[in-house]
Amino acid sequence: MTEICLKDSTLTQTGQKIHVQAVVEGCEPLWFELDEQFQSMIDRESVDAFFILYTWLAMERGLNLRIEGKVSSQLTDSVTQDIQKMFLALCPRLHEIDIEVLNPESFWPESAEASATGFSGGVDSWYTALHAGDNGTPYAYYLFANTGQHGKDNVEEVFAQRFAVAESALRTMGKPLIAVDSNIDSVFRERFQQRDVIGNIACALLLQQGISRYDYSSSYAPEDLGVFEHYDMSIMDPYLLPLLNTERIRFFSIGDDAGRIEKLEYIASRELFSNEIYVCIEKTVPIKNCGYCFKCRRTQLALEIIDRMALLKNNFDFSFYKKIRLASMVGLFSSADKSNLDLEIKSALIKKYGLNIFFVRVLSVFWSLAKKLMPEGVRWRAEQKFPYLW
Image (tube, rainbow, N blue to C red; front, side):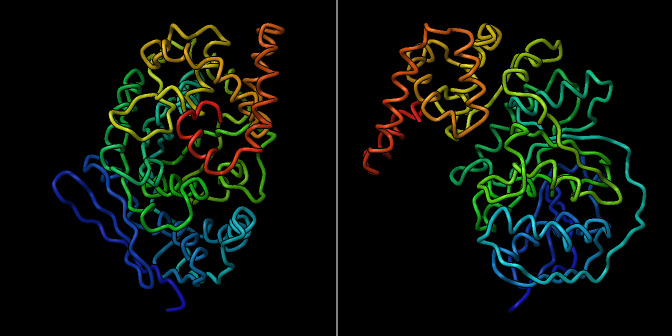
């Protein structure tokens, strides 16, 4: 077999779940699953959601791609002209392939004029949700996806618990959170962050009969964004998202104009904020903010800077934070130059405390040197035991 052939998709119902699966040859079938109450939003006219995924998958495997099902003409032009080049720039391990689309279509049934965004309960998704409300354009729907972000082990339980945490946080917005499950992560070879955006966007494309606008929360500072080799597809957000538009749905990158501290200050000042936030990368259950991963560290230090720790006292164990606070600062200072998000926190801490954290700055210099000289085995064990130092 020298090609992947995407023919169509099927929709079946089991209990209260709707299962949408690709009809494909030359590759494993990808599928999505969601609650039956959202069935009317599912796009049954095209295979757009699968098209963008199989483009990446074919490039992973060095196979040509043939699309026999109906797809958006606009998306077809973008994939064949620009998107494949962007994927190759981002991940040179991919292969350039031939893509043949047999049934591009420009005219489609009208979809509902409704907007949506993703929501995980984190800083970026909260900022996007609250900002839209303040602008008088609140979202009709929120999406919570499983496309690889919930780890490799015990995925169903982690996905379910994280969904429950996000749904609880979102209650003040009074709109539904749609859980979209998939098998994307078990089929793709590249790690999640390398292709995270197209997995999440595919979930929105699946629902484009009920959504005409989808806002994607940006997590990178403007100076980090671009089209170049990188481990995270999100660095291409403002450039890639417009190319994923179809005749029925538009995608926008939101929040790349605000830093982490600015976002937290904004979130904390809004009445609709439920005082519930979840930022952790750990996948242990029960789901909670661990307090020591790099995202928890960054968030807790930012909350200290803006004097908002009391607001989120039920989200973090701040007694534990006080014990690791010095080490967290040293860890962040020693690695801040690798991330503008960390560099922002570092600069704010220096501005807030001045000479009072001079000792932290000195320690971080020595710690940076120690990490470079540390044997790999020792480094791995230390990073596992003291993740807040890295």
